[in-house]
Image 1 (cartoon, rainbow, N blue to C red):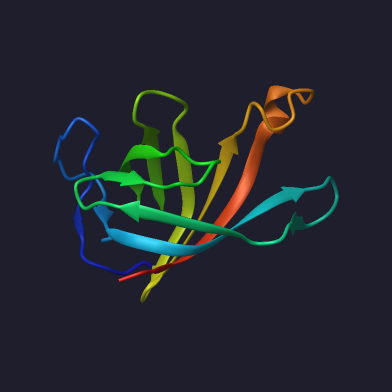
Image 2 (cartoon, one colour):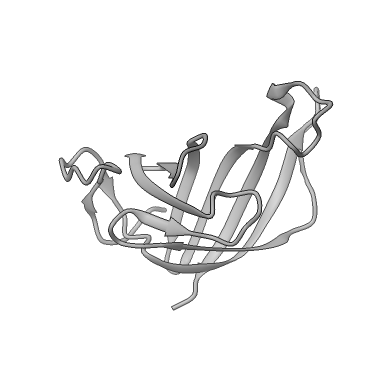
Length: 138
């Protein structure tokens, strides 16, 4: 269930044209991430949870110390359950999908391109599926 204070989505360039009602995700979030994969003919399998924290600022910027996620980024809502994250300084945009907010909990998924994770794999195989489950710290 998505809940929170609705605010207009903001483009990285500061455009405040309302396009998607955006719940308030501002704040510091801590929890875990799971690296997952779907094997052909099988269900999705996920590894052990790893620590994850992220900060979303109300003006559409954010930070995280996570090695697999852009350290500094801008974000904008593209649908009621999807965010686009753009790394500051360039890099590939991430689409955070199935974004769900309930009370103080935030869950989302992303395919993150990790070109150095296993250089022997073809490029499409280096998109790693992650599930993030975090709680509002404050």
